Length: 446
Image 1: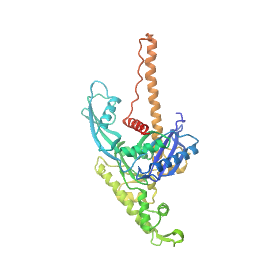
Image 2 (image 1 turned 90 degrees about the horizontal axis):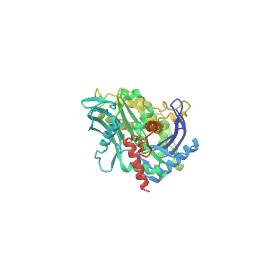
Image 3 (image 1 turned 180 degrees about the horizontal axis):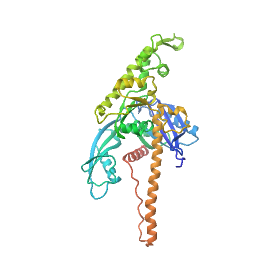
Image 4 (image 1 turned 30 degrees about the vertical axis):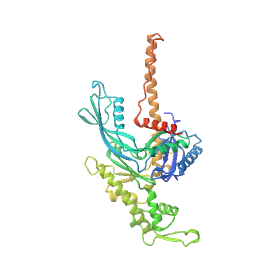
């Protein structure tokens, strides 16, 4: 495979904005050729709250990635999250005109487009329509119906919905930063691509991505996405609690959390004390690590209980919905000491920390294997896979177009009477159409 295909993942987070440039090497692993980071100033809980500051942060991250790689970034794959995201389950069906013909991509697309016509709440837009199991006539639990015969095609769908204004604000920021939007992906799905194995998705697994402003949940079972949720709490809330509880400034609270923080209060003794410098010549503050871990424990417990409630709502306690692979923790918040033990204690499920190093080339920088880069790596993978699929589609179109033309030449038909054969249209998912309509909106909004 050619390794000159470049893709860019842009993770617009609450704490940081990351631009990651990469390509696939000959072993089908991702080679990161440039990465840029910037402090995220205009995003709160995954939603853009200040357009100007967000544009500046995006430009800063992109400029850094460009200078490291020596490449010019033109289009990016962007992740979307935030408390406005919700998901729902829906069943729909189509009746086929000719049951004697096999089911093909067009039938699947018609069914997906029908789901897209669902009436949403005012100001909401469908982001993803993810098919789960199909049913052809009376035969149920079909994973791949293409090539089968049947008159009635039915499916269960997992539908992800978000606020139109929030999606358009992200699009506006990307466009104003001088970039094209090649695709938008739900962030928990991107993180799942980066840290989960196919075996885990098959067995049943809950991915918990603890970011700065939100905690994202994605549940997989039998290799299919079953449930997604966004909880509006993240690492920043823990920092705020430390700031208030210890009467210190935010910068000091963040450093305390990273260096001495623990989710398990029993680890620290009362005698373990850390001294914080006072402001402008004031006396330094002395904080016991026991109190620090109590503050962190209380908030982390609340976040995990919120997530566990979502897991229970999905149906984890039923025999059919059991998550054998347990929980995978990722995101910047997953680096908190003793978090895994606390999650196992509260949920009673096995847990591990998810590192995005499985898909990275062997000579990659160790820093890229941090859970905080899971979303950026997932978005980069999405961009590279999208390019690869498009290449395959173009090759198919060329083959389908050239073969009939060659046959026509052999028949030596009169040129005047020949009508040019229309090119087969590339099958587009609804989400590609949605991205195109968003691009058109942004262009017209100038």
